[in-house]
Image (cartoon, rainbow, N blue to C red; front, side):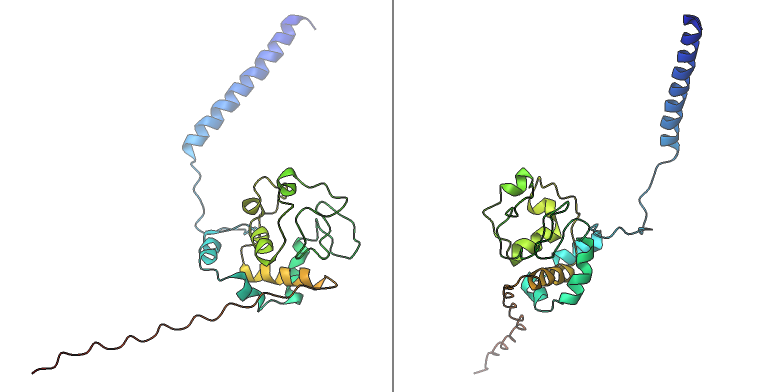
Length: 197
């Protein structure tokens, strides 16, 4: 096969690519994608507008911890179990072993290679508020973390997971005191009517 044949093959391939590119551009103008009114398939862990609205009205995490269930937390932890082990002495996986993690300092698990963003927070404590923020949105809590999990939008589910994590500690930390219930607004006294003299 001489160079003329190779040039014809290369020219035909190039022409096919140009036609394909042109068709892609034309169909992009003809068929403009529109967002769906309602998601056909909801991916668990992805925050929606409804979840964002619920998050705005969220109470302090202590409120949800007072109602937390270790059993529900164990069931919800299954989504974490793909990357983390929870057993005492368990091996690190894609993420570190989480046995006894509550009230421990960040990035302290031996044998696990933390991202530089996580290692920079090694002075912080995994208290209830920190763990809540981490579970809610890891990348917002520690920008630059290598954890690819989108987060858990429901506060009660986060509280259940934290209760489960705490229950796995041989000396479990005590739950924070629930916030006092909001007192109803006191009735305003009726304004005194001016007396006629």
